[in-house]
Length: 277
Image (cartoon, rainbow, N blue to C red):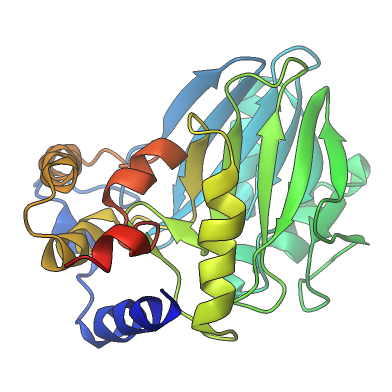
């Protein structure tokens, strides 16, 4: 299995990526690559905030206490504007990894919101303005929401995914940064294929099937093209591609997916099936 996983990674890295801007066919200019969206889940609300060329930031809001956390706030002004608009209290900065397109806004955000005395969480000492370093299975609260840290090294050695549940444990979410994308995974910048396999197959694939996956980039079209290269007759992948193309034609995000969906069309989550081809 690991040999196949390595081969998938090598083949995918050799393919020329498709710039995010080319995935959108709208002639109307956008300030960002996608339109912002809000997703209501049991006990929580997630605001998807497009940033930079193809990044996604998030506001995670506890609907009961109106406390919130921001995930990878690379554009602080946009985050604080959303916080003000929602009328919520920002308490926490959640950082998936140290790369500047994810953690590069931490210092400015902390300075801009100095009165809030924000807690900045992450799994790597290289993360700017870090106030608490977290490790695998560490837990913390955002209001009444429960957040569990999942150590997923490979893209970077200190990468953390964040699994979120409400009081009843229903309708969970996971913020995966650059470990798991829709139909793909992050590049192995600081790790090995074995580490990524463990992160995807042993850790994330074992989350509840209905867990919504909020990833760090809009890479879905190119990932689905690669998935079809690997499994050209996979009907789930074909349907997802048609849906994703329709979304991008309207400048809409293709986020979130679910763990169950990823098991149907993500070649890196489907290594056992890919081995049969």
